Length: 137
Image 1 (cartoon, rainbow, N blue to C red):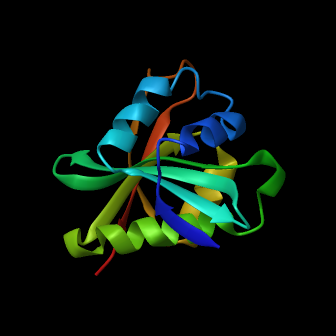
Image 2 (cartoon, helix red, strand yellow):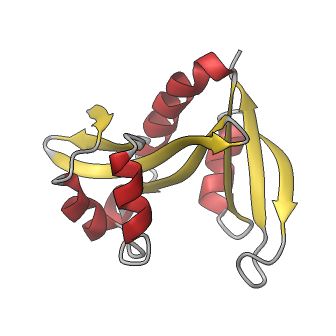
């Protein structure tokens, strides 16, 4: 298993595992350009990716984490978020968010020691966005 910064050629594999990749095309290209797009590769197959940015009130923000649907619940999301935490360690905390309906991500965050830090209503109709933070020091 290897986690590395994404290359332009990875975009095709990312689009294959992300059903919303077409809508996120600009976001993915921008994250790639900013060197904030990371991929998890196992045996030359891209299984997961994450976007890590530092534009959230000068803090690191895990903007997106997605695991291939055929490989969920195998620990890949945990490994990827561990690496993002390591990259954000110098700043002392990592922020992220997820929809209230995303039970899988909420379980992962709670298991990793994140605490809920806020909620925004109105981004997705009927599904509030929950914000989480983890102290890394």
